[in-house]
Image 1: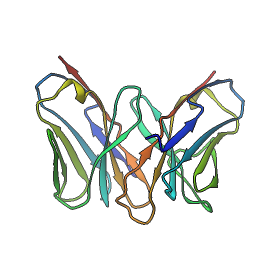
Image 2: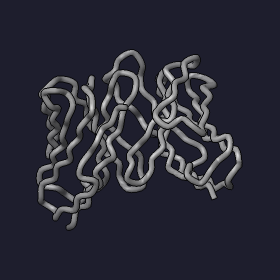
Image 3: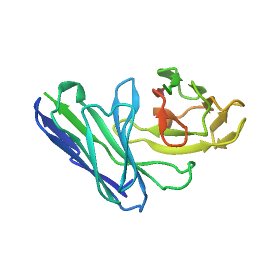
Length: 114
Length: 109
């Protein structure tokens, strides 16, 4: 959805570099998520946030950190990138308060770590 | 930990044939959602199932949620080339969604 944007869309970096992926949304949703997608593994949850002051680890948080700067912005950082963090990264948003609301995904960021 | 297994991983069908993908969770789910991801695209929500034994239809797509709320299926009748993509289930335990590994569907014209 155009309501969820991610920057950059593609990034190539070297091992050991610090990388930040940005996500912005105009849907007014409280909940935001970061996933990584690897071939044959589906989507794995890295971090999620239910509001600006609430950050939670997902299944595979090691090597990643996040910042929820505002309701509309959720950033993912790789402090020291390594090659096995090469993947497609998706941000998603979801309205809060009910567990039946759908997630809306951004277009994805393709990250390559050399 | 929580796991959602999805089979098959790949499926090739002739146009007009039916297609089914299955999801199984290791624990009871509060609800399950299905997403479709076109090649080069991002996951797009298709439907959610909440009630035990629920069945929902969207044109040629039929979705089922098991009685124990631990499994689900997506069935496509008479596939078309526009059905190409990867189909994911996502089981919700309340706080997190656990995605299945996806089934990649190829439709041969």
